[in-house]
Length: 221
Image 1 (cartoon, rainbow, N blue to C red):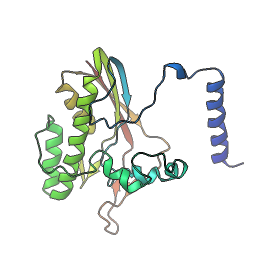
Image 2: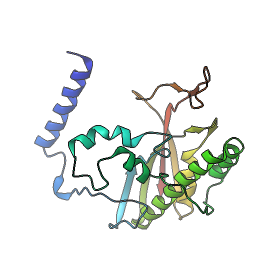
Image 3: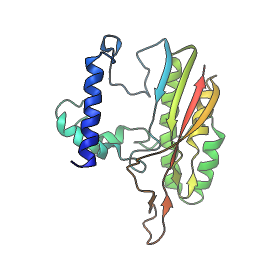
Image 4: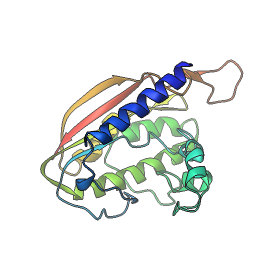
């Protein structure tokens, strides 16, 4: 038996055992679909744990393409349509922001200034993503109780050779709404599906390292 099959059976067995012994309390669990850029219909939250996208779907992680297999299983049930391209356009940064507003992050604007020196279009795409990201954080903050904790797992991607420090940008966004940064933990990405190097410019022999670490940003209200 291949290692892939062994891992699959091991994970499936663990999940079945968790159901058998009621490790998952479905009575108090609820799953729902919602765009976090819009007001969130829940409140009194004590803890938020999330791993948001690290950038727009078209140029960072192709969430639509990664979801194509799932779409084959839920045809007709997906309210956004059974198209991976449709999903990409609805993700954070999927649509270009025509009129920019100032966002509360010095780290973001340092990166944008450097990217604009190389490629104005890519800088605009980066801004559009972080504009949507800021809107999502704004709505999440509205749901929090006093003394609530937020844990965001993020990655610092590179655009045009410029590293975007999403961990610090995330902290600055939350701080603008009155939260306090507790800590930023560094986690090495193991068993990653993307290659260690890629060729973002499509020029022969010119490569760039992909992300090797993730950052757990812990905030407190």
